[in-house]
Image 1 (cartoon, helix red, strand yellow):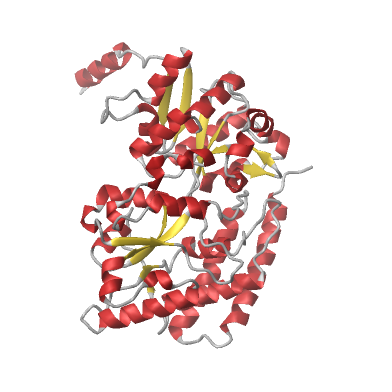
Image 2 (tube, helix red, strand yellow):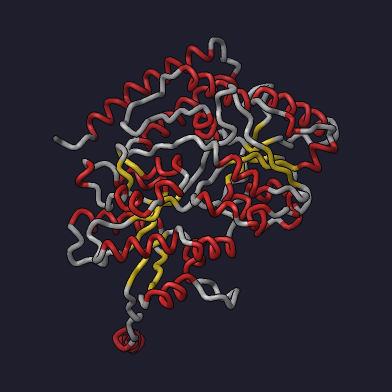
Length: 448
């Protein structure tokens, strides 16, 4: 054991260090890392290679787990970057960005980008609504890499066999009615557990989508709570009755990463809410569904609602203590917004970019065999133009947790048959949650 230890130590000492590059990008997602540095599946130059050819600057892409990336960034911001590797550009996921917006504007660790966006013209070329998650009080701290509009993807073959054209449903109540007819048809034919759509009963992801459709953020950009809006209680009651009771038509996906795809293939869940990144998973892992799927806009509650919302997202940002902010800005634009970046993106995914002019690329308008020849890129583009704004603050996670508690109470009431005056009870629970949330926000503020 001593010999092995000594040998290993010698190898570690003699192992050459990784060659250093001029610029460094941090990302938490393997998909983006492959988009930048390639995966050997094509002979075309990678973005890293193209950038070096055009600028003479070499670029390395470091793939770091999301939580580890957040910890390292926090450390960099807390100590001013002293004695630490500071990336030239970093990617941050939407569920994590709020923590970095807690300090006062002048203490946020990312470089404000408003002036750079304006002088370069990108403020007019990017989808304006997609800047909201990456902003605080009107100051933009990151450039969006995506839009992630949501559509409904459903098993057209199974709905047609049941004699139902799901795409005719324009409202959520109409959608519910058709889904209940669908389930009645299949339950009578020996499929009692077949559910019309994936609707989680233990998380609020889809509920948040419904609220965003109604232009409701639980917290707006100024941390003003909207939990007591009457439409929040109305939406919670509707959702609870979608997953519990005799009008339920939604079911949970199998636990585990992306096992909803298997549920769709196995006919257990027959539709899902699908942002563009979900269709990439379908295309990569579910060839058996080729020609069996169809896409439609998300049903609304009211005519003023959006037929879509957004789910997930990533920004590219520049740490304030980056070595050369101008080089970082040039790098960010090239890897996120340039024509070369648009081309690399289409090699690895079908995630719609935030650059509006890029939507004219014919590749976004191709017929898709998985969807029976439907041009799903065109549908995503159409929905993106109606995308409601989504805000993220340091307290959004707490607000979402409070919403989960209220939804669980509503579902329990429906399941037990104790659902008399459910709407007013939900409103009471929301008022309690709202009061608690406001106390937490006040407690969590920085001292003036």
